[in-house]
Amino acid sequence: MSFQVSLRNIALGLGAGDIATLYSLGRTVGNWLSISTGDQEFLSLLNEDEGNLLRRRVAIVDKINFRNKWCTKLVLLQNGRPKQMSGPAIEDVLEDLTSFTICMICIVAVLDSFASSLVVQETMRQLLNQLLDNETLEDLLVSQLAVRIRSWRSAAAVREIHKKCFETKEKLERQGKVVTGLMPISEAVEVAKFL
Image (tube, rainbow, N blue to C red; front, side):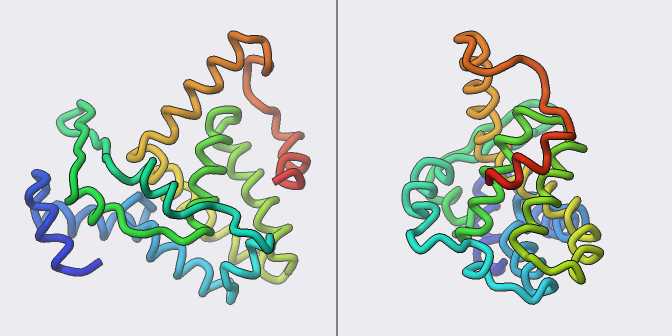
């Protein structure tokens, strides 16, 4: 993250110290502010390229549409209350994301609507193991996965993707199109195969 972007954040009510703290915490525990850097480091540790993991020949996500829909406002907690911010400065804060990061944000947001955190973690472990297809990377993957999931979850939350997923799930439950409750861990392998 460049210092220039940090200066723009001051207009949002976040000081340079706030940004530095958020970014440092994000690198340690995972959050929306450090998501791109964290995913780049994650793929680098795994010695993988996003193109190898996202194997479809056609673009799996439309990055422009994603940016237009999910990167125009930001919702943060301020003194325990949600604060919504929008405008050109938000677009600078919410940096461009890779297709890999967008996919992971969306997958985690949807899984969070239908499964407990433990099941989400197991499903993502299964999914990434299948994509990597390299048993020697299992320990490295497991050591990094919790932080990456927190980052993807945080990025979904500040963009209100989580909110939309939960609203959609509730609507589908009311219509009787999905079963109420959470997905059992025994389904993690099948969901990962589907994904």
